[in-house]
Length: 250
Image (tube, rainbow, N blue to C red; front, top):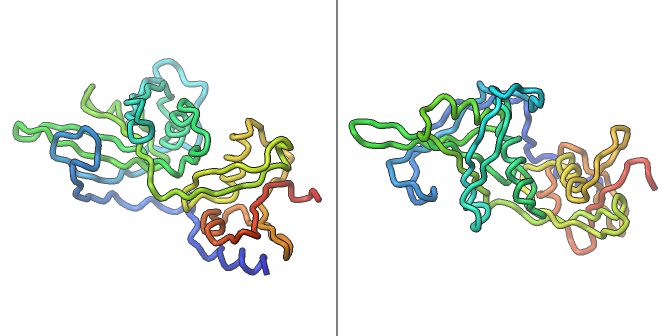
């Protein structure tokens, strides 16, 4: 019965990293939706021509720089965070770096956040701001260097579509019973496993094979790695639990 339930939930669309990025879309947005914006604003989505799959830790000094990320949408006590990153750092890596600086506990899922870039230009004597929603493979530092100094800035935005999910993790941390994570609807089982290990300050061993299981009095069913967890969790009853353990452990 549980296996059938999990199989039905796999019908949800799973984001694919290999799917093409849609072309930029130009939308109108109210200035009140972005903190501290005082100019005419348009909202668009960047493309991923500037992309890289990994952070280049061996970059020379000329390949690194500072980004000021405005974060009052994430944490009201902090207007911004300044981080130093590689020229090749992606949006995903920048978001993760800021989250780590805040030492957030339950809201560590990077899918909960979007990084916006505000670019200011002068047109007919009037300042016009364009808001770019950066895709996960864009390189923020490279984009910043394409514009004059002080004519662009970055805004970290936390989405409101997250759901609280309880993952029982006593199999990896005996002193713990469960972890409560705020997660985005598209976050997969594989990404959830990494989040749980991060919260326990543990590294996943290369030869390990951890998975999530949906269990109840009827039995258990393994949740495939690429299946989103939130659609499963929101349909769980009091008798259901989502646990993490190695596949071959009993």
